[in-house]
Image: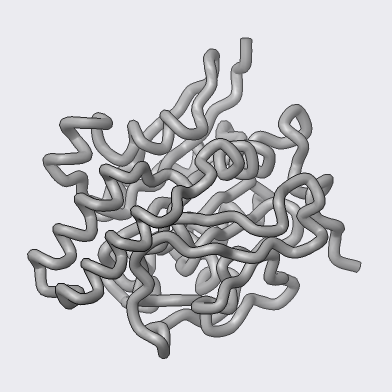
Length: 250
């Protein structure tokens, strides 16, 4: 039985849909990453619910979720999150960032993010994994749903995946931090619901929604491969740590 502890920093409000089907985004991430005997705890960051300093040491890993907010914004909770991520980095805690989480990690570590010059990416996209990711396929499809991207990597970080749309699809920082621009946690029904919500809020055009849905029909992400990749990073030596997946920086 594992006694590992993990925190999920929830950076988006739960929709009625995700609450009904998955018990909220916390349920989505625990469903993908959780295993028997582990302790997973949610923190609703946007509501000011942050882990206390004395709690941080107890966590073996931290997940930072997606968000409707901009990682380059200066909302109070975003600035507080940046400081928390800097603290976790100083503690060498394993951190996995997804979409907004990927971008805010980049910012916290000294990189830059902003609007993607080429606009929204909505749908399923094939990404190229670095040859150093030798335990995984060189090509993996993933759900994408973002209009921001990493502009400039933090010092000591390296790109470990890219696509024809986004230069930094994944990055790693030292051996304990990894960001993924796409959404390995999405299911098809969750993706389609989010596209409809974006359209309803006039954040994307109908043509973008239609194209994204069509791409999701044409190709299905390899959920098990993404699950294995995320677990292998987040869970350390017993799950083949990132230091064994990609070489250390000299």
